[in-house]
Image (cartoon, helix red, strand yellow):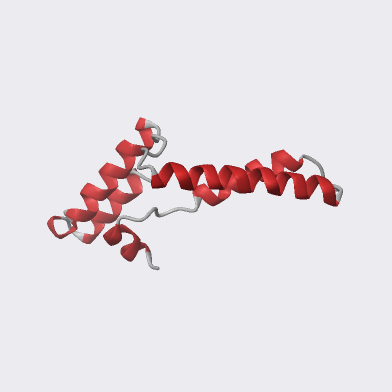
Length: 102
């Protein structure tokens, strides 16, 4: 999907969740050459965690809260996007640029 479609549908714009999982997985394994049994054990633990998260969603529990800084930034970006017709193209892009950090 395009960034436009992601914003229109309220989906996350980044892959931070995937990147966070990958970093966590790397720290669980913790070394370059790992025996198969260690990998299987970690995969079982990961499966268990995933099942717990699915059950949490089914129960209707709230998702973990994002940091206020990120929530505020997303709200500012959404506000700029929703009012894009009120801005010149340059001002729209400038507003987006002020809220994106690398």
